Length: 238
Ligand SMILES: N[C@@H](CCC(=O)N[C@@H](CS)C(=O)NCC(=O)O)C(=O)O
Image 1 (cartoon, rainbow, N blue to C red):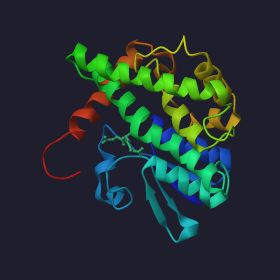
Image 2 (image 1 turned 135 degrees about the horizontal axis):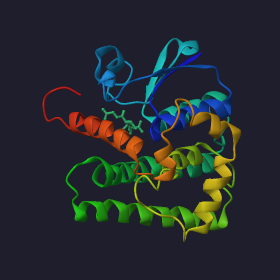
Image 3 (image 1 turned 180 degrees about the vertical axis):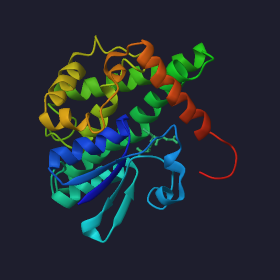
Image 4 (image 1 turned 90 degrees about the vertical axis):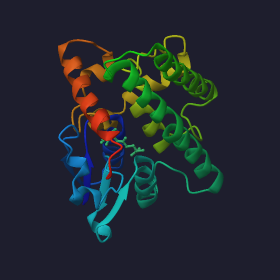
């Protein structure tokens, strides 16, 4: 049994999608991020960065893993699925996984902060992060022009990691209409039953898909603003 510490965010959904795909038994613990539960000492013992997601593998002596990319690799290696065993195949998956961890995630995250969450709208910052997202999306589109999936033409943890973020492009204010291969892949991954179950564990905000700016979306943005503002504290502590 695996304990999953999570919330309804792209990084959290990466892990619920993978667990559903791998059909591993897990118990979900949803943390209130705006309530600061991710900064409590008992959670920091599992996830020293004070962020979700994290897992504890009870069957492996209570082994804890934090950082979504590391969790995906751990789950793939545990099951010998969603990542090939040969060195080149594994490397291709790792390359696209790192591309997400170091590029797509941070850039979309910052686009959300400046476009959606902060009260002051700074055009230069919004342009910078949305522009970088667009550039990264073009890289994905080019790769998907010649490949069914991102690595080895086989569905892998690299697809899960990138999809969980890219599917929220409207929330970041970035369109993909002129990127046909990316759109084809977005739809193909979404069609997987495990993906549909994964984004309901816990249930995704509709606005992440639609980019809506209605009252519910505004309330969601307001609670994300609380997390951003408290998370960037220069005071001591995580
Ligand atoms: N690089 C980390 C990022 C984790 C992360 O930023 N998690 C967010 C939710 S998506 C979080 O826990 N935020 C709470 C906070 O900033 O206090 C990963 O991929 O696991």
